[in-house]
Image (tube, rainbow, N blue to C red; front, side, top):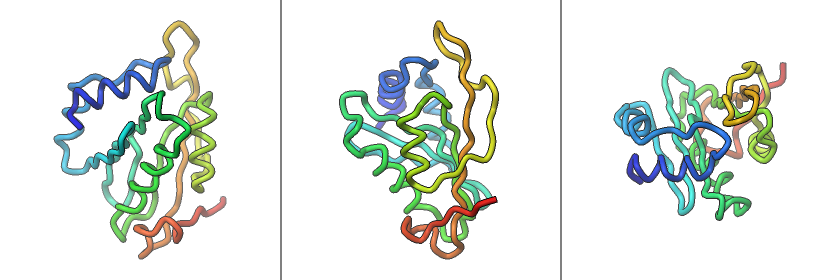
Length: 151
């Protein structure tokens, strides 16, 4: 997918937020630490640095939602992590219940909150929930071998 295609899909998927612009996607895609995962109807953009990987954004076309594309993209990301990766993390809007259910169902745990992080169009800002999944060393590429540590 091109930066323009990513921006268009992101705008369709995130109608309450300011969508990311083509230039923002182009800049991220130029980074050697950023990975793009695509499936028909969706994409995930991630960044892996120093044994941590972050899901920057995951977008699924509204006409394709509830078909498992988001879960598949999430698992594609986790399966591609290097063996020395210690954790995967992401931020999600507190009011995005479908996404929060997806992430907690894939063993991501809430570790912190950023108050009023997501600006909304014609609505008050929404908190961001920071979620993390600790990874078992040597098994980062196998989603079935990933664990969440409590505490």
